[in-house]
Image: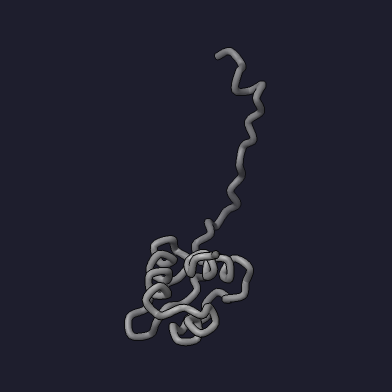
Length: 88
């Protein structure tokens, strides 16, 4: 069985919960068929992970990850096994 955290994380990753959208506890609890306590715990964990933002007196919002992307592209260097074994 998928946890509340995993369900919400998947919904954010798949775009079912859009960046910037407000997450209401009652609606999510009904949709996921859970009580509000595990939902709050999952939202707190998602906030620590940077996937949602809690705005006091306004609620939780899905973080727009594009706001946290660097201004320049990031390139990853692929290291082959041959490179890692090469004498130095």
